[in-house]
Amino acid sequence: MRAWTVARPGPVEADPLRLVERPVPVPRTDELLVRVRACGVCRTDLHVTEGDLPVRRPGVTPGHEVVGEVAGWGAGVTGFASGDRVGAAWLRRTDGTCAYCLRGAENLCPRSEYTGWDADGGYAQYTTVPADFAHRLPGALDDVALAPLLCAGIIGYRALRRTSLPPGGRLGLYGFGGSAHLCAQVALAQGATVHVLTRGAEARRLALALGAASARDLSEPPPEPLDGAVLFAPVGGLVPVALRALDRGGVLAVAGIHLSDVPALDYERELFYERELRSVTSNTRDDAREFLALAERCRVRATTHAYPMSEAPRALRDLKAGRFDGAAVLVGDLS
Image (cartoon, rainbow, N blue to C red; front, side, top):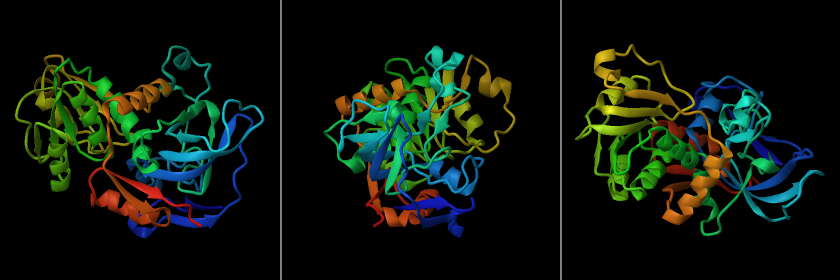
């Protein structure tokens, strides 16, 4: 099969991805073999490719928003049939026995593994996924529409929950890419007022089209105090900015796996009055199931831009440069 690999992490402008020939992977006893039909392009893929995240698997194939069909399985797998449509997401495996897993916080498992970082992902013709971590996908959406839901959507949903937004609350979203535009739809469906702060004019137009009450540049404050906010942009300098925009008791959730350095915080201006700063670490399978069901029920739709799988490097460059709103999705089989 053909697959993209990170030959040597570095700036995407220097083309660190290489297209190579590899054997079709053999699924382990508890795994499915999945023929990839579409794979979303996530900012975490950019962090893996450029080396913002430490190398876990040299020459890894990125991609963790995988929509595909079952092409085989290990001897211990039951309940799947050839051709079943399944999704592989960021969380790939946990130990299931640690204190975190046992209390329902498997996203904090110290031995957790991740698709496209610890194991090869979906920028390829085939990948594998542990059957217990494969998601059965709703039938109403096509492959391209589904792919961004498998990370951008799930993480956005968990980040929204981490804000503890009260019913009818005022939510600020800092950055408005693949995850934020899905998070906004969930928040709006739940009755929130959404204010978007982002640098891109196209992204601001999309935010207003989706129903945001306002969409402003990052240099501007929101028009009213916020009950909660999510920081999607990986810019630590925005943390104090977003905290200052919170009303008393408001919560800021930082959604990214990577963030540039956060400047010193002014306690009285940015944290006093019980404002809170929270991180978001991956997701649980329950998060994924809840979100996929909610997305189907509330008709959450990703704004997508399809790229041929053969143009994965261009998709990552365009993501980094902010050349599209919504989310990019790789399609095709690299043949």
